[in-house]
Image (cartoon, rainbow, N blue to C red; front, side, top):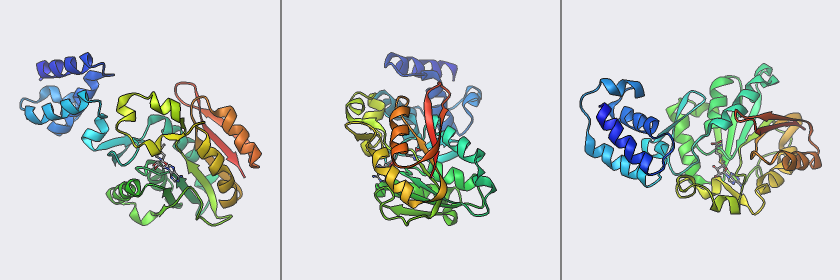
Amino acid sequence: MHALVQAYTQRLAENGHDNPQRTIEELLAHHLNCKPLEIYNQTTLNESIVETDLNRLLNNEPLQYILGTAHFYGIEFNCDARALIPRPETESLIELILQSDLKDQPTPRLIDVGTGTGCIALTLASHLPNAHLEAVDSSEAALALTWENAEKLDLSKRIVLHHNNLLSERPDDTYDAIISNPPYIATDHWKALAPSVKEFEPRAALDAGPEGTECYEALAPEAWRALKPNGHLFLEIGYDQSNLVQRILQRNGFHAIHLQKDLQGHDRIIHARK
Ligand SMILES: C[S@@+](CC[C@H](N)C(=O)[O-])C[C@H]1O[C@@H](n2cnc3c(N)ncnc32)[C@H](O)[C@@H]1O
């Protein structure tokens, strides 16, 4: 198996792939139904299936779409081209929410805006057993995937899904927390993204418009309306958007604004109170 891994790794490396050996180990582990480090103990492999997947990787398709799964906060989600691949940065959003007073409230009502795979809403449902979870997306295809994940994780009775534009059809003064990782990339930056992102992940999950802050502008007044007094707003932001988004939130009346950095040291999460 070592020689095969080396040969496949070499082909990916020549294509300029990041972390080629790890990618190959994960791909082979998927086909051999074992852990990545256990592949070296295996003796047989269906090389023609691996060859098909390798060609998809060489065509820049993300590994998670090929495998059909992605891991987020220790949970395996189904994942395909209907929704964004969950990112590690977004795990900081979960950390911050789980550290807040929401865990001490008897039945907090939370809504995730732009849910995609459902990684945020379903992770919160599994860690906050008393919470009522709702999730919104403007993409019906993404919501179909959210529902598949809710069923796979046995959380379908814990979540209500809405096919809406942001919070436009949600009631006033209702939620204890609104959470969102909305599209936040400016159109010109979207055009320059790596092919593995731009050609495979849904544009509607990434491209927010010419400025990149359009979703925050639209969401802030709607979140103010839909939150209960003193309710929490948690947003993921682009690495260089903290000043802009802070100003949008202040303009819409939010207070107690707090920024949290990601593991790379970039301001990544913004938390505010109504
Ligand atoms: C950056 S992705 C985040 C997906 C997921 N929450 C995550 O963190 O991996 C943004 C999501 O917002 C959805 N979206 C974009 N515009 C929207 C809108 N106006 N109303 C509701 N959802 C929207 C997209 O379809 C996409 O699923």
